[in-house]
Length: 252
Ligand SMILES: [Zn+2]
Image 1: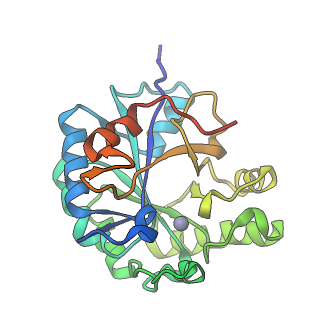
Image 2: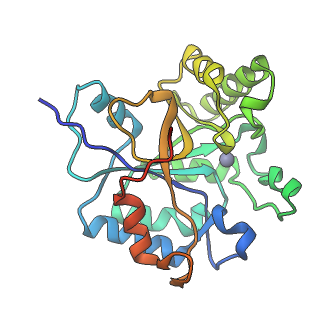
């Protein structure tokens, strides 16, 4: 008999040495914040699980551990290697990194249209170095990071299929978890992702994954830089636990 628990799937982006100004807020946490967050999860008894375990629990095949949580990193920023991988290895947490297959070793150039300076993305050798730690699962996040719901469906399907083929070939592992850039998805895109063989996919809707959720539309809990004492958010540490433990859900 397995008992489902609603699972927060944390969404991180870059982990930076120092904080960036406000327009970059949603794109990063600092290394200090991140180390505190990972060690605190460990201390509080959270058990990060892989998407494989999550899906097996959905199917009732395995029981989730106490305080299950999933860690995800979008876009594959280069600074993960220096600022995130060491503490993740120290605490022994599994995690998933979503990569943009045409931009490996380049930058998140899609932010330039918003007037932001792009950050460097992981190169193939850096990805293989992280892969060698045995804790990371790399999964596709399209070829070029478009809004999939706003382009023709055939193009969206190509973005989802070809990025997976390229990454699988380069990294020598099967991939079946997808991440919609900007959380841009509609029923046709989600159905196409399912048809081409993805077992689940994550959005940017805020909420914890429930057993009744469509696996192609799993919500996440976004984590981004908050100054230690922010007028908007209150103490950063309390805000972190609020995000993980709240029942807030932005889905309709
Ligand atoms: Zn992204």
